[in-house]
Length: 269
Image (cartoon, rainbow, N blue to C red):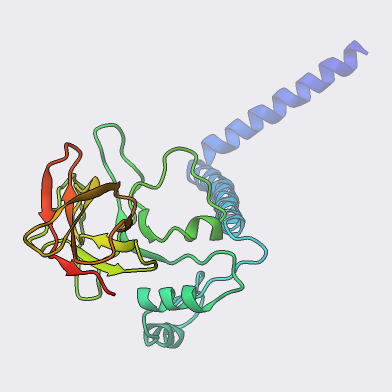
């Protein structure tokens, strides 16, 4: 048994000595062989890593779409082809925001419709952290969240803005402001009953109106306070006791100061 062990170690030592001798005698060939082995191993590692990354990316994109979700795009999501196909896609008309809104208005079966557009890609850097150089910035409508099965892990929707078709902007700021229109408040009056009048009061652009004060009298120069009503919406409905004469409204702020007065309107018979 000991002889077998000694023989095994002797043969292993002899083989190792011969291998070291062959490497030393043929340095260039040995180096090229080792380099070829390393290149092959690293190639396999790179290919497997790339396949796993592609698989994870595809699974992530598919997971953002439910089984009953489809997309309408100008460009295909994944593109494999020749220059002729690229020109075909390039000649397609851009999908506009107005077309998306029209689809939202006309389509009745979808549970949610989202409109999405990418308009910037690059690296985002703040004093806290720097992102990867391939970050994409998307513009989304609120319907995109349920359509993509997105759930906000942290945060909330802060602001939903829409620019007109004739306006362009790459930046928007939301700041506190006060609206005091140059025009007077508007009213409309109708009489559902003999002793009561319904007044519809509004002031387009005014942000500080807290209360509406109804004024009534026989003419525009002899108006007095009838009642006050808290502002409830863009147009507030005031039910006042009046059957004839003229009626107007004062727009009051939180402190009761008069911000504006409407013109006097005759109560219809």
